[in-house]
Length: 136
View 1 (cartoon, rainbow, N blue to C red):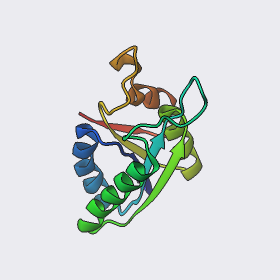
View 2 (cartoon, one colour):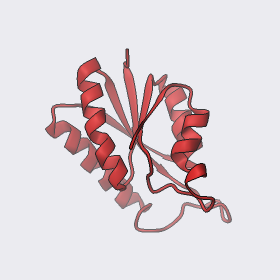
View 3 (cartoon, rainbow, N blue to C red):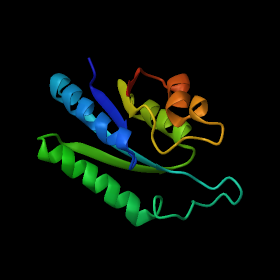
View 4 (tube, one colour):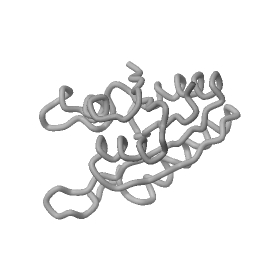
């Protein structure tokens, strides 16, 4: 049923909690698991935001740690890093991969100035080309 599962990761507690659900679904359906990290571009300058959370090294470490965590549970995964607006990029990658499911935490690090109603998760729900499972 879920041949390809896309799991956008960040350093939030909600993403870590969602990982348990990802493990259950991937094991149940023998799914292909793709881990995605999105580095957001600065709106003003069109350059990557330079902060400890978005540095190239930090993203590589985040993806490696996530991949190792799944490997410790016997799950092989692929990793991807993309640049752009998180919600749009997540949906574009899901479309490219022909993903059957996106699994996300209910609130990650992507809250906008407008608040939770315009969070990355809510935008992904609105734009996704496949079902989105939101883990509270």
